[in-house]
Amino acid sequence: MIKQSVAIEKFRLTTAEILYHLPDFPTVLQSYIWQELDMQPEFPVLNRFLTFWQQELDGPLHSVRVASKGIMSPVDLRYFDCSFTLH
Image 1 (cartoon, rainbow, N blue to C red):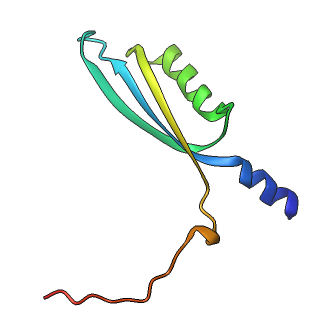
Image 2 (cartoon, rainbow, N blue to C red; image 1 turned 90 degrees about the horizontal axis):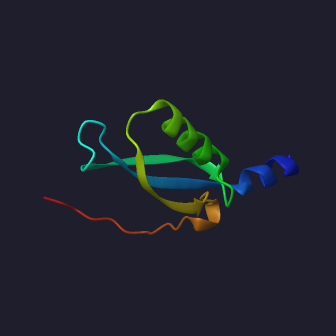
């Protein structure tokens, strides 16, 4: 059980903003947001997706911006004791 939790801790929520050129209008950039659990700093899942993109899709990549955040744990949660009444 401990080994499994250690393996899970390696995964991080990874978000990539992918800018690519439209195939029919090469001067126009389009944005695509990709999000998945992945391991930093190698990002094997993202690299597989980008390899697939380059081999199978028509829109050539312009740039990729990556953000990564550890998986939320119970320690990260905060509870507040308050209520609001809306009319």
